[in-house]
Image (cartoon, rainbow, N blue to C red; front, side, top):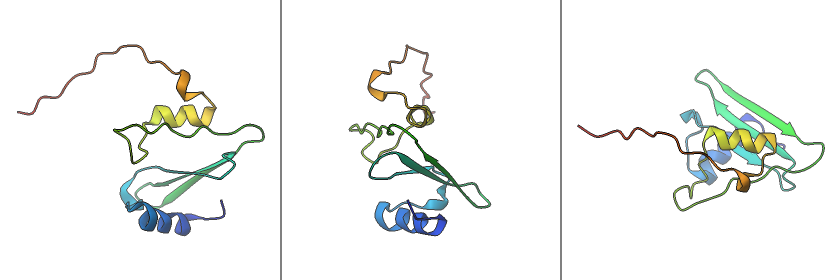
Length: 102
């Protein structure tokens, strides 16, 4: 967890093959999973959020066939940061408008 803006940006480019300037939030955990860093380019500069837990660990996102890249939505990120068990979450049915190509 020693890397800063430049080190994390280089890691994103070299290891993940992504553009750190894309506006995507990149999540990094330490080995013990008691620290997390989020890196985000906000258009005019990078921002880092760093959280260290005094007790407990962060849960890693669940990878599925659709999200092999480890892409999660912002709800899952909130749950991870708040310590919610991701396997126990059940969402109720909601209307999902399907966009039809014209």
